[in-house]
Length: 98
Image (cartoon, rainbow, N blue to C red; front, side):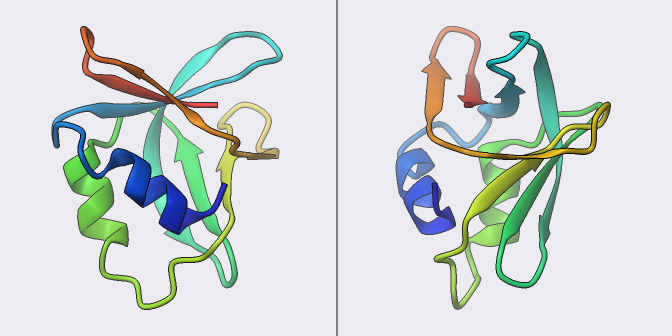
């Protein structure tokens, strides 16, 4: 998934929804706590506190070139995984990146 597509997908969601990464291999759910633009890619890092849509839009919404691939870096393995979509839980106010 590319950053511009991701920002379009989340644009109509409530700004207080939080982001989590759901690993398909072991179904572990980790909060996305850090966002970094590294050259020609966007890296989302898991950590302790989940970022909200408002925080993500504030950090990434003003980029001039936002057609960058998105990767998630997990805290335990430090491997980079590609993002293929999102799942939205309206009841819990969460967005799961898968």
